Length: 168
Image 1 (tube, rainbow, N blue to C red):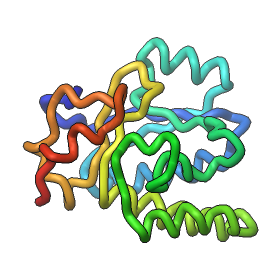
Image 2: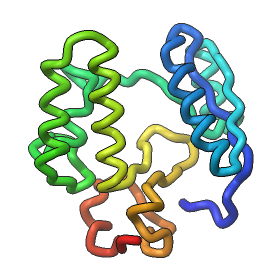
Image 3: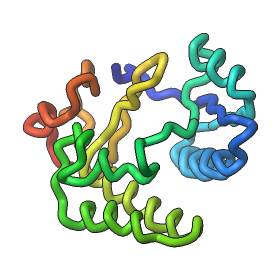
Image 4: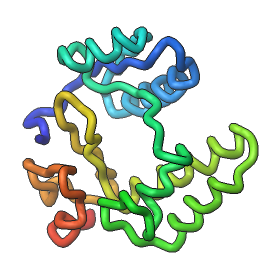
């Protein structure tokens, strides 16, 4: 559900055995700071992360979740992806998901992934499936806030929402 009043402070966590995730949360903290939101970041053991998420002690977390044979979100964002529940069908996004399969080196993959996720955020929004509390994330430069239902759910995907969303 969407919060009635935006919060000015959030707490996020990452696993201590995944130091690369700390940089992602630091980048998110910088973006949120520009919006007047403080993001406190915690490094937790895998067990501590699970406990904090289940207890509600953290608002969001980053955790590697395997995506089958690849970790590049092809199945989630490609028009022909088996888990493309957003209903996105975009030639540029399809090309970006395919290019991840041929990217070599973490720097190249990071760049392509960032471009892909930026492009996906321009086209849709997401509700993470594995959250203690549901949060809806979308690009306010693209989607009019008043057109996003307060009871949006990712259970059956988001294709049903597309006709109701309005552009800014």
